[in-house]
Image (cartoon, rainbow, N blue to C red):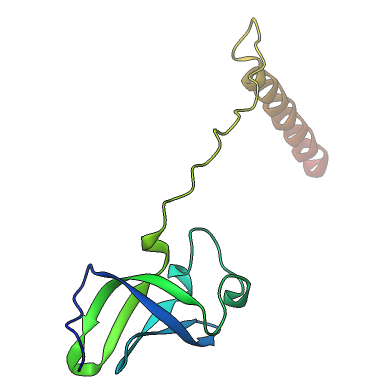
Length: 126
């Protein structure tokens, strides 16, 4: 007899099959659900086989139940703590006495380019 499976439950299951898009997990003797590749673990998963294998016992969270269609969406990732990320180092800021120095260089170049363009126009007209 099947037990009631509801959204939000965390239950044990066994991996019964692996496809490129996800893993099929048996959560009851008569019920299998799909763990989509994006729900295998935190971070990017290129190959599911690097994370789980057929026969592995896994803890899954039920994300969605469409019982009338026999579809159960599961997540292994939702049962794991999100990894703590190391603080990102910011690039050192170069200090300058003139904060607009970068824009002044561009401004000067722009004036040079405009003058060069005008010179070319005059050359072609003559």
